[in-house]
Image (cartoon, rainbow, N blue to C red):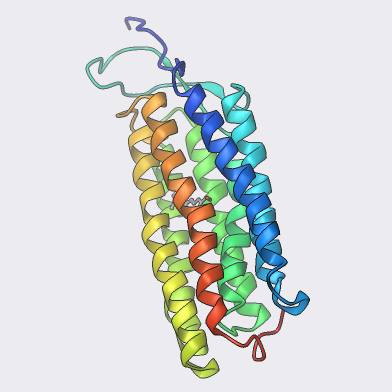
Amino acid sequence: NPVVADIDITNGATNWLWVVFAIMLSSCVGVGALSFTQNPGRRAFHYISMAILATASIAYFCLASDLGATPIQVEYLRGYPAATATRSIWYVRYIDWVITTPLLLLELLLVSGLPLSAVFACVFADEVMIVTGLIGALVASSYKWGLFAFGCAAMLVVFYILYVPGLLSAKHLGGDYYKSYFQGALVLSILWTLYPICWGLAEGGNVISPNGELIFYSILDIFAKPVFAMVHLFGLRRIDYERLQL
Ligand code: RET
């Protein structure tokens, strides 16, 4: 097998990654400041958002400093079907996701009024999704697609809980709760669906370069973390919090 250049060169995306780091850190501080405009009893969602944004800041610090990647043998390289090469797999992003995606779900599900058992079921499916994605990314053979399939099935379980029992329960809480919850669930599910697409093109199929992958995921992360936090926090201004168990 001919050896072609390893596709782990990520120069050039680095400045952009520092920009994303700054966006995450300043949003974290911004949400903290915003929390002071609310009564202490209405700050739980700000604190969850701050935890998410703090985790993302550290993850982007690692990405921008070229930490948290490992070379993995590539099975298929576009243009070089029989080539031997490695690709940088940024495992650090999965460490971020395994912490932040359950918190994002918690932020949303706390508005649904679902019982703790349903919240845990959803968080469990979410963890299956992230961990299978990580293992799949670290596997060189095409068994990675089996892990990817488990991950996608787990994401469907998450969406089922959000849209079936979640919506029903939010409806019981009342119109304003329902509006905030539905808006959050819609934004979240549209954005989350784009992550496995990026995975398939990057870690999975090696169709896009690691630079392209860093840009793709980082734009998604900006929408899924700071932008989602803002949309959700402003959406919550219309509810009275009295029916929530925080
Ligand atoms: C993977 C691959 C396995 C199949 C699926 C995936 C979905 C990942 C998602 C990640 C969301 C991350 C967020 C980060 C925070 O900003 C693991 C890529 C379904 C949905 C929201």
